[in-house]
Length: 322
Image 1 (tube, one colour):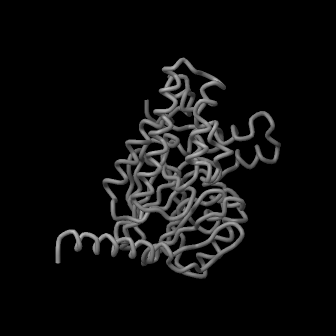
Image 2 (cartoon, helix red, strand yellow):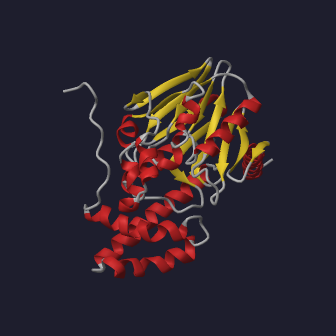
Image 3 (cartoon, helix red, strand yellow):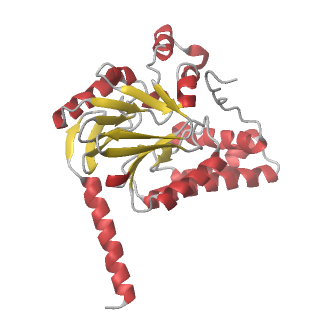
């Protein structure tokens, strides 16, 4: 057997394994999300874009306890997820891990806290959750929405760089990586080769760049791909992903930065800059989710970033330190 044939067989086998894992078994489905088994007792809750859940979530079952990763945008959808978990395991839900502060990933925190979970996140998530989330409405925010944001369940445990969590024998590695907000966590399940990426990865969806530093984000994507090449990835939006999907998303960010930089060098700004880039991006990425929601803003915000004028949330100061 030649090396080329062996290489082809190996690559086909790896792809087949990936698709079998991703197909998994779907034990719960609603108008808001579907639940997929992507590893041994590791589940991804993939949202419906038009539903109420907002951003993807998931959970990991250990031998002593359960950890939930993100809690949706709507408390009702969070309660559905809790009910789905209870059909799979009655072990205590020990941890909720928020991958970042954005509302579509944290608004169900209280549902799981009331079930006994401790909420864990990067330090900046605790600092920003009840303040920065108000900006999505601007001045038009309704009193009820403002009250909800200002009463969000904050993290009980915060970390700066890394934290290891145990569900009995099962280890979860939670790590800070820059790019999407400045307070992003990835959750690695080593024994299942699964990585929950939060909004550091978007599969076939245009990202929200409101708080982003895209130069750091590109480096983070390289790090994820190099460190976890054979892993299954759960993005913040879109279906279960693999290493190639990380490369595709990186290509979007790199291409966006290059297109904006070229337009700026040609002296374009404002609407002229947007109009120079948007048609080409629509041709290439128009089928991606959220294109109409975020594509134009992506161009404007990247221009601000490259100009050095973009405003992003400021890091939290460590409590109790001088």
